[in-house]
Image (tube, rainbow, N blue to C red; front, side):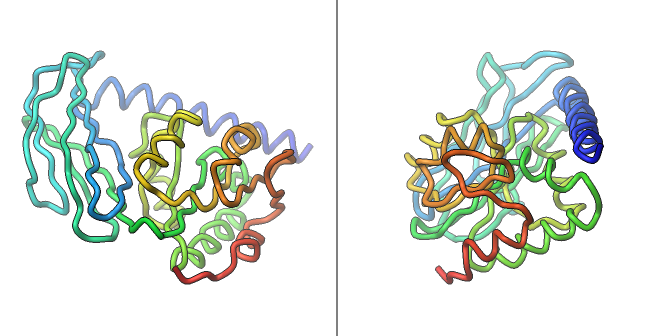
Length: 244
């Protein structure tokens, strides 16, 4: 019965998230996407301009980092606008894209190439914390305990990453980028950027697909390739307090 209730809550949350994604995609005039970059290496910021229901190209898009304007470009026929940026400082920064009177904010995470990165699939987080507030608190506290030793990044299959980021922050999770997820293709893009793919916590399906690309892989479900977790505090024990 407990597992049934858990699955019901899980389904309802993602059903709500689905409708949020649909509403945001039809109402938002511009969307900017979170990014992760290696210090000193170029990263391409991405934004999409939209009309009422569909992408709208040919619009001027301005990009900002921490409130400072860094440049302007035009969105293409598919509504996507790209701007190359080379970060010179490590840390977590706000990014913003503006087009006319509309704007959208996101997060840029900049690390050096030696920094150990801990990726967390949103699916895995939400499934494990929906039961009660104590699980939410345990997950958030465990991740806060690790952020001094690892840079935490979230991955999501849903387009409304701003909504996902807001939900995580309200629940007390460490602030970071929510990156788009397209399976192994996304992992290959991270490798090309020079990121150190140290660990991932993911659903069984994702974990099986990408485990070989990470030094450590964990799941709260039984898998052949990933270490099994039963509670969030185990993650701290498995990773350890490594200062790097």
